[in-house]
Each structure stands twice: as structure tokens, then as C-alpha cells.
Image 1 (cartoon, rainbow, N blue to C red):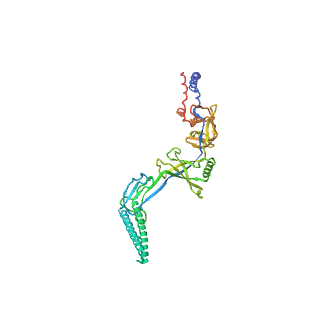
Image 2: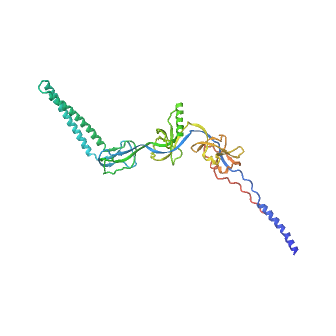
Image 3: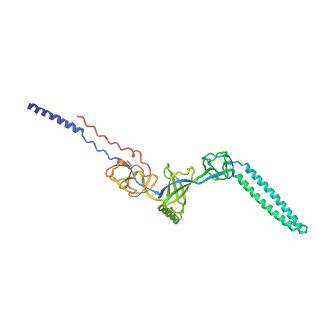
Length: 404
């Protein structure tokens, strides 16, 4: 029995050694993969202008409620609700027959008064001649002097009634006071309008080209704008303050205009000042929309910019990842300024000669080496190449263990 156990032990040794050999072949270390590839670009110097940004609302430059100025039945509506109209376009027609008759009556009254004046002047001449010959009393001269003056006054009153009658007749045609956009009609055809008491509102028309944008600024921003105006006056440039705005679905601030009004004083409760800009509006942007407003506060100057996507944030603040000469990534804290399109102004932290990681940021770890792709243009001069912005590069798989 003992010999059998010793024999078993001897036979087990070769099998264990063979298993160790096979296990060692399976765990052969793969080759080290190359450093990950990232796209780098140098910052760009470009002309930028300091801006302030606000939120505001669009408003019509003119808004008029059309009212019936004479009484009558509404005969016709000559526009489509919401349609643009030109100045002088006919919008409403009010029953006019009675006003035509009133005008004819006033004209006839003028003719009658002219006849009365002619008769009084003729009689006055005749009695003056008779009085000079002692053939008529002076009282007759005085009487016809009074009749002439009274008839002249009545004629002037009749002529004024003609003017009023013509105005009333013209009010039966309601026309557009300016070029603008109509609202919906508020009274249907056949209704009596312009009656005594409360006036009859017919419709509203808005002038939206140009367009107003109202927004509020605080005291600090107001002083910055005042400083810019003072600098412009000292340098002899225009003191007009340019402004731009963009809608919520637009990139940047594509609509350009200028500031044209500020309220007389700062509101004591809010510490803000209402400001208005005026903008050309050939596209017919509607009043009442929420917009983003940008106002320039300084002259154009040269600044260093990087793509906004390259900027990172953490508990220590803003930073950029920079690749050094040894291809090692370093975290560079920076200070930034305004945004220019897709670029961010960097006021402190990088130089134009630095190489900033602009694509593949997830693969760039501070303190580790990378394979930088410097084939792209400088930051901001063009978009990174598709290959540089692709997913992490595939590494060469380790060779399969040799069969035993």
C-alpha cells in the first residue's frame, strides 16, 4: 500500500509541470498600445469687440387702433385679416349716402349766402348814393351795412360747413395710416358703427418695419455704455451705439440696428433703466417675441481665441488641455472673455504658440502622453478633420499564444 502511494506521487509530478508550462503560455503579456490620438490646434488672434448681452422683447414702432369717426352701417371690409397693407389702402367702407347729401346741402347753403351778400352789397351802394343826394336817410345806409356784414359772416359759416361735410364724407372710407400689418377685424359688415357713446374699434394696424426691441440694463452696464460714448466723442467717431439681436431659434445675433432711446431715469425699485433699439425688419418679425440682445461696449481689438468646445470646467475653474513638446498633456488654467461665434476669447493662460487639444478631449489625460495630430489649421480657422475627431483608435491586438 505504501509503495502504491509513492508511485502515485511520482506519476503526478509530470502532469503538474506540464500544466504550469501551458498556463505560462496562456498568460503571455500583450505589447503596450501606442498613446491615444488627439487633435491639437494653436489659438488664433482675431479682431473682437466687447459686448454686453441682455434679454428683451420686440414691439411695433407704431400701433394704431382704427376707430369709426362717423355714424353709419359698415358696408364692406377691404383687407384680409393679418395681411400686410400699404399706406392709403382702403380698409373699411361706411354707409356714405347721408354724408353725400349733407355735403350737397352745405354747398347749396354757401350759394344762398353768396346771393345774400351780393344783394346786401348792391343795396348798400344804392342807399349810399341816395343818402349823398339827401334822397334817403342815413339809417338805411346803416341797415344795409349791417346786412352786408351779416351775410358775409353767414357765408363764411356755410363754407366751414362744406369743409366739415367733406371731412365726414371722407371718414366713411377708413384707410391705412402707414405701411404695416393688419390685425383681425373687430366688427362685421352690417353693424352700426360710430354711434354716440363708446367709440367703435374696427381693427388694429402695426408698423413693424422698422422694429423696436425693449430691454433693461443695470447701472453698471449703463456706465459702460456712457464711457464708450465719451470715447467715441473724444476720437471723433460716431456716438451711435450699435446693437444686434437674435431670436431663440437663431444662432448668434444676425439682426443689426442701433440704440435710439433710454428712459429718463433709473427705476428706484429695480435699479434698472429701460432701453430701446430700432432695427430694420424686412423679414416681418412679429412684435412681442422674446429675443437676445447684444450691445457693443468697446472698439474692436485683437484677442486670442480658441474653440468653445476645447474649454473645460471643474472645481478649480476654467481650463484648457495643452500638449507640450514631449507630447505630454498638461492642464492649463485660463481666464476667458466674450464669445465670438463658436470661439471663446482667452485673456490669460495660453499663448498663440501653444498647442491646445480641440478634439478627443476624453482621451487626453493630464500627465500622460498622447499622439497629437497637428495637421489641422489653427483653432478657429477650420473644423477638425473627421479622422481626428473619430472614436478612440483601435490598438493592435496581441498575438495568439503558440499551440503546445
